[in-house]
Structure formats: structure tokens, C-alpha cells
Amino acid sequence: MIPGAMIYNQESLPWIVQKFGGTSIGKFLDSIAGTIIKSHLEKSQVAIVCSARSGDTKSKGTTNKLLKAAVEALTPGSKEYPRIVDEIGQEHINASRDLISNPEILGELEKQLLQDCAKLKCFLEAAHIIEEVSPRSKDIIISVGEKLSCRIVTSVLRDRGINAEFINLDHIIEQEFDADCLDQTFYDYLAQRIAEAVKKCGNRVPVVTGFFGTVPGSLLTNIGRGYTDLCAALLAAGIGAKELQVWKEVDGIFTADPRKVFNARLLPIITPEEAAELTYYGSEVIHPFTMHQVMRLNIPIRIKNVMNPSGKGTVIFPDISLKNGSLTRLGLSELLHQNGYHRDMSRRHPTAVTIKNNIIVLNVHSNRKTMSHGFFAQIFAALDNYGIVVDLISTSEVHVSMALGAEIVERDLHRALDDLKKLGEVDVIKNMAILSLVGKQMKNMVGIAGKMFTTLAEANVNIEMISQGSSEINISCVIDEYNSERALKVIHEQLLNIPRKNR
Ligand SMILES: Nc1ncnc2c1ncn2[C@@H]1O[C@H](COP(=O)(O)OP(=O)(O)O)[C@@H](O)[C@H]1O
Ligand SMILES: N[C@@H](CC(=O)OP(=O)(O)O)C(=O)O
Image (cartoon, rainbow, N blue to C red; front, side):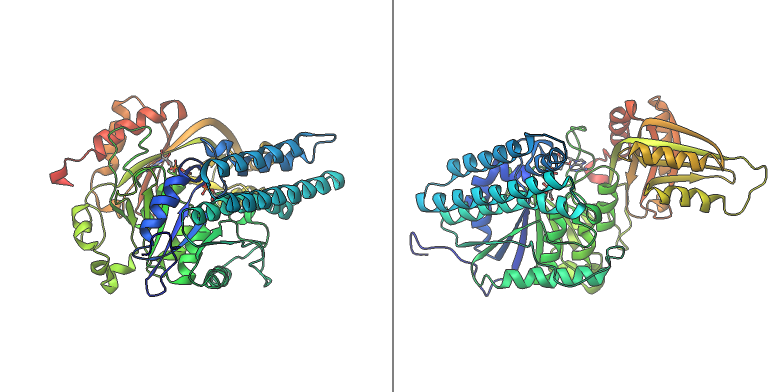
């Protein structure tokens, strides 16, 4: 390359999609732009998808601040929401000044950032006047986070000699869809639309807002927080990428949360079902909708660490790779054996253990002496009426125990309880945790449940409820949240701390 010449995507190379989370952009943009993206451009065409910027933690990040501004806009006489927007604007300008040396690029960027913030202030002002923030308005408010973040990333890349282009997905959805039934047709449409937007960039490196437009029924309601992972997966699917890389601040997926279990092992490979189960039950490494969109097209996901870019990370590999032989092409069949999988993809040992805190248990004991048909149906109808999702369930003929995430609105819970009390005796236990042992086809591992519960008993951990679903992949129990970290550690020690030669 001629010194000083701009770097572009090279059309003959295969695509990879790289997704960067908010805290990574907040803390490591210098190395993301200067090292990570640059080095991948040598072997691939790269498309970047970014979340809204966060400082040290997601809880103090831009998306949470924007949601707070939306709440403030509804508070009579509040002066807080314009202040929050100014604070967000200033943080982004400060970050840009720290990272960009070219005065022209910086000047243009600051102008754009100020414009986005001014527009947001007007929007919030209007919401304040009409005293209404609809789900759709909330989406528009949070979309500013990804816009500001992607503008900075694009400018920093240009400053480092990479010819990047900002892509805003605000208006990507032009067709009508039924908000109550966002099926694969909708996701296929989105994948194709996002890919079209990216292809319009030609050989410039696309920097795509992880926020994707007017999702019917609202993005926050129908997809939820962490939606950027799904956006990246849809782009990977639409563009036919050879790999989706999700960059985080952890080396990959471990046998347990590495912040809590210090000798947790990094898993070089994992099946999508196992990754989904871990994500759902507390190890929030990737948005749960992400997996399906890429796996169905045989595209692997690699979780990598922005603080350790040369690490291999964890590969979530598509099961179908096994069937059509592409696993060998991906260089994974050897890895598969080394990592405790049999050829039929069952596991020799459990894969990981995870904890989901902040759980409520509901016990319903039927008031009839004999089983009346419709008892279960009535329970689920009562919960469904108030949009309450059940994480785990265990039943006998006249007794149902359910574990629910405690983020349920208190009012909805009370109303559901009133309905449930008509069916029988109900008791509610708060501050509980779900402990899940995950592993593909665990039902074939004779004695594993026995070992799990003996280990907990020996550690004096009382079990409130047990569930081994038909999924074959998860044995879960509900324990007191107070015991959760200790339980995680003993289960890891006894069931996952497997000597290398036996793995
Ligand atoms: N089994 C697991 N493997 C890896 N990380 C896990 C696991 N369980 C929980 N975690 C936690 O998930 C977090 C995900 O990475 P991080 O980059 O910090 O998140 P985010 O992108 O949401 O900011 C880590 O902080 C890690 O401690
Ligand atoms: N900014 C959004 C979207 C997102 O995907 O975030 P992250 O990639 O940092 O989890 C959120 O906070 O939910």
C-alpha cells in the first residue's frame, strides 16, 4: 500500500460482520479502529455494526440516559431532559476530541453531533408538551444513541485512514407487517434491506447503526435491549458473511461467569442451543434472537475480546455444518472432539453453569380434591392476560410451581395473583435464583442430576424447585438468591472442573 493512501474494502474478499457493544466503543475505540478493524481489512471485507456508546458500564450508558430523558419528558415542569441531552452531546464531543486529530474531520463530526442532539431536544420538547411518549416515540429517542456512536466510529476510522461510511437504518422498514406476528418473512425482509443499504457503500467500510428502524409494535417491545446483536446477525445473513464477530470485554463464553468463578474455562466452541440456553438463563453474552438468523444459513458466530484481539474467542458453530461437511472447512471437527463432543453432537460432560438472579416463585395448589381439566390452561391464561412470562415450571397433578423474572410490573403481578387465587392456594416467594446446568443432550449423562443435587445438598443449599425440561440441554433448580454465588462455585468445582485429559 502507498503510505498515506486510504484503505478500502477489497471487493474480491469474503465479508465478515463485526459488532461492537457500547462499553467497548466507550473504552477501546482507539484500538478497535486502529488495530482490530484495520487488521481484518487485510483478509476480508468488513461491515461494522455499533451500539450506543457507554462509559464504564451499560447502566450508565447512552441508551439508559436516553430512556431516562424520555421519562423526564413526561414529568411536569422538568428541566432534566434537555440537561441529559446536553450531557450526552458533551460526552460524545469530548470522546471525539480525544480520538480525532484531523481538524476537518473533527469539525464536521462535531457539527453532526450537535445537530442530532438539537433534533432530539425538539422531539422531547414536543413529547413534553403533548404529555405522551408512545413506544414508537421511545424507539425514536433511543435511536439517537446508535447514531451518535456510529458517527464517531466513522470519523475515527477516517482519521485512521480507513474510508468508512455512516449508515443510518432509521427508515429501513418500508413494508407493513403484523406487529403480533414478526415471523421469518419479516426477518428475511430486514436482512435483505440492511444488506442493500450496505452494498450501496461500494468499497467504503460501512458503519451501521445497530438500531433498525420502525419495527412494528416497537423495537424495544418486540426485540428488547441488546437489539444490536440481532441487527448484526441480519446483516451477516443478508450479505452472506463468512463469520459474524461479536466483540465484547470477555474472551468468549466460559464454563461459568468468569467474574464470579475465577477458574472458569473458556469454551473454544459451543452449539447454538447451548449458547441460547446460557444466554436465557443469566449469561447474557449475546441477544437470544441472534443465533437463529445466522445458524440457519450456516454462518458461525465468534465471540471475541476487544482487550485481547489475538485470542481465538468462542465459536458458536451451526449444527448443519456437521451434516454438510462444512465443519471441516471451518476447521472445527478436530476442535469438536477436543472439546468433549461425541460425533452425534452429544456431550461427554456438562458445558457450563449459569445463574439468573432476581426470580420470583409462584406456587399454585389446586383447591379441588380431584384434578379438574383446564387447571393448567386457566393458570396460563391468567398469566398471559398480564403478559407474564414463565422461566421455569414444575408440576404435579394438583400443584404448579413457576419461576418468573422479577422485572414484572408489580401491578400486573397483583392482578394475576387475584385471578390465580380463584384456582387455589397461591404463595409467592421473592429473592430467588435459577441455577442451570447446561450441556447438549445431558439426559444421556447418567447420574448428572444426582451429582448436581448432592453437591448442592452438601453445600447446604436448599432447593425450592427442580426442572429438567424435555430440551435435554438444561437441568435447572430454584434456590435462594442469597446462596447463588456459592452454589455456582460448588457446582463448577464438582461438575465442570474436569481435568484436561478427561474433557
Ligand atoms: N458463561 C459466561 N461466559 C462469559 N461471560 C459471562 C458468562 N456468564 C456471565 N458472563 C458475563 O457477561 C458479560 C458479557 O460481556 P461484556 O462485554 O462485559 O457485556 P456487554 O457487551 O453486555 O457490555 C461479562 O461481563 C461476563 O462477566
Ligand atoms: N444500545 C442498546 C443496544 C445494544 O445492543 O446494546 P449492547 O450491544 O451494548 O448490549 C442497548 O443498550 O440495549
